[in-house]
Length: 152
Image (cartoon, rainbow, N blue to C red; front, side, top):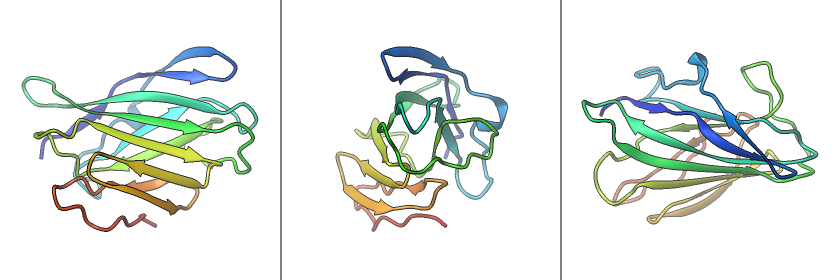
């Protein structure tokens, strides 16, 4: 599988403030760490005002190809603040592939509610699960979806 990287994305921050979220070196895909790659996205917000945003994922082949768009949303008045490995306020969503580089799957939706409840929706599967505060998800996106298993 080719390496995958996260580009900067547009983050909508309540109330009605659009900001651009850069992708620091520490948040770019690390190929072969514990899987095919890691993709991290952080929206800068607080539990009281909520945050949502979108990030595009691209393969790092000869011709960059858009693999997927990750949508994330943290609702206002979230009861728990996530502890990020980067010392800043906000929310963190980390996705471990497999993400197919070919086929019809081009979109992932990751929704974080109250900083503890995550929902992953694709055209192939829809799953819900309570996760630990690092919001680490496994996305089964094959033609024969496997059971959803949160990593711990």
